[in-house]
Length: 236
Image (tube, rainbow, N blue to C red; front, side):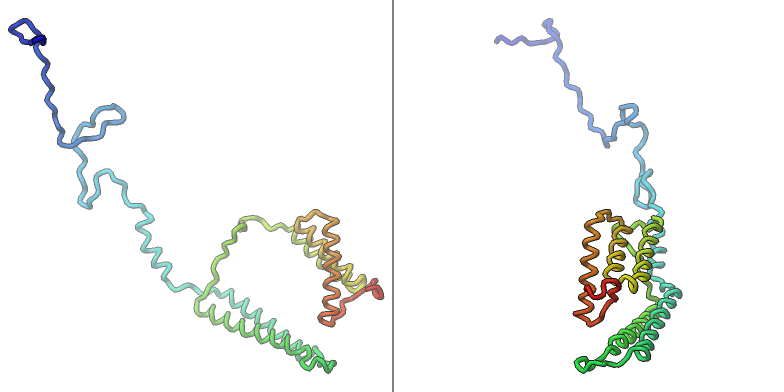
């Protein structure tokens, strides 16, 4: 045999002994600061079933029951909505009154209905809507808050745009009888586009003229209503 026997009595080195493996009862995570094993006993669980040191329930969880009860409570009546109901009823009454007192009878044999039924129908519908609205408010109905996609409710009102739009409508109201609808309507459409931020002046002018002419002939031919022609009388 070529292998040597390593025995102490023959002058050889003593063979190494294997270290006994020790299995801990419970492995603990090493300490992050010292790199060693933490000292002391493992944390015990509290009577509630959670280990010691665990985070306590959030305060919002405790108030969940209160919020649920508040949601289930009867909503308060918004008495300000009665003002809108009264406004709708007033408008409906004025429309019916105007249709029955100021609108004339049909003068064309081809139109036996006349101009009265449509405004009377609209007035009656406004009264019905006002009544239904009032009943809904009395029963506690409230409108849902608006959740616009691109509307920031904290943004201030752009008064410049509002005033420019009002000015365009006022100019149209003043000039429609003198210059006619085609010219005043062109100013109205062009001014509205400018107020809303469109700066394509020449293109907007062409579109405004086209819209004015289309509406002028649509009322004249389609509805039989002649809009003021103004200085363009005899041309249009």
